[in-house]
Image 1 (cartoon, chains in turn brown, green, purple, orange):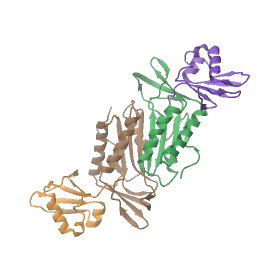
Image 2 (tube, chains in turn orange, blue, red, cyan):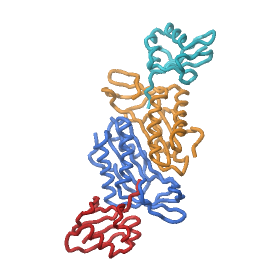
Image 3 (tube, helix red, strand yellow):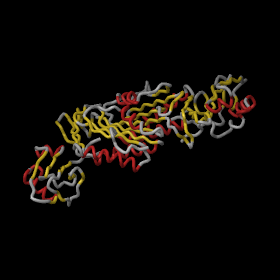
Image 4 (cartoon, rainbow over the protein chains, first blue to last red):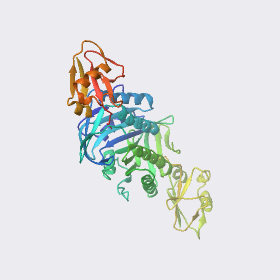
Amino acid sequence: MRAKTAEGLVKIQEKPFSIEEAVTKVKAASKGIGAVVTFLGTARDFSKGSVITGLDFEHYPGMAEKKLKDIRERALKNFDIIEMAIVHRTGRIEIGEDIVLIAAASAHRNDAFMACEWAITELKRTTPIWKRETTKSGEVWVSETP
Amino acid sequence: MRAKTAEGLVKIQEKPFSIEEAVTKVKAASKGIGAVVTFLGTARDFSKGSVITGLDFEHYPGMAEKKLKDIRERALKNFDIIEMAIVHRTGRIEIGEDIVLIAAASAHRNDAFMACEWAITELKRTTPIWKRETTKSGEVWVSETP
Amino acid sequence: MITVRFFAMLKGLAKAEVKEYNVSGPIRLEELKGMLKKDLPALAGVLDSRSILVSINQEFAAKDAVIKDGDEVGLLPPFSGG
Amino acid sequence: MITVRFFAMLKGLAKAEVKEYNVSGPIRLEELKGMLKKDLPALAGVLDSRSILVSINQEFAAKDAVIKDGDEVGLLPPFSGG
């Protein structure tokens, strides 16, 4: 039931992504899917006491994609899920815009919740992507993973 | 930051819903939102050993809507979330179609994950909605909450 | 008059969605169940099941609830939404 | 030749995205760091920080890794994606 390759399921891109499109893609994997849990990370206007006016994301081309594919493969191996999609934007992102989306599909909801939460934590821990926040006092690279 | 009323945020309807629309609605509540977790329940083709060819959902009009609004209000009170939307379809639902969507928005992801998972469990426990499965051997009301 | 609404499998057993009963004053839930069992024998076997919940005016009701003229009673099999 | 790529704050400190170094044979990561500190003094204070990860050919590398001619080394500040 699981797709062997991450064809179109793992992406890093500058342009906005569609949640509906990602959900449709994971749902296409099997008619046995009963639950899809998605995590959407968005650009908020406040962080650690500072007003944020915009974000810029930089990634290590090649390695970042490889690490995201690796997260999907380990999620399929370690959780009882049927499919997972991951998309992360780079470049300039305005407040309120979407940054990252993870969609996990499973027969039963617990597995999708667990895999989705694990995947976003793992993404923050292992994927070479960096965020620069624009505040009134200038631009700062964010140097920790919450 | 929280909307006092559930205007458009809690719905029971026959027609398909849009995930993007529900996410846009909860995101509109605040620029402080950094995470949106959604749970999507879909009609799978297999349940407890039987091949399912379709589903029909019946609800108690009035009471079901009230219970969903109540879940949203308790979620806003008991979790550190900013907004929540809930939509559940009724009537005939074909295999692969969406049944229910819960979207929880928060500043930090843990709160949205917790509230979303709690809300779907609470929905199954307290909302007067019933599922009838169509199998090769006929139609059966499903009488338990997994 | 008390309005009783049946849902899902109970609707099938009762062969009705709604029934109305005239009462001379407030009655206990137990008494209403007695009336229902007489009127709809097919429900007799399930009405006392712990898995059947009862609502009064669209709120969950306790076993010892009292029902008044004008109330709407719902007989609710185990939910299976979501 | 070894290619060294700098990211995020390290790119700012190095005032470069990529630097290339000629080596006569395999060298240890420690040796490469020594070369970088001489070439880019602004990096001296941070290169030994435990929070800076190193990749070789886009895989995380251990402290005692050996770098060969043709390898691509990444100097990776703490990640902040997601």
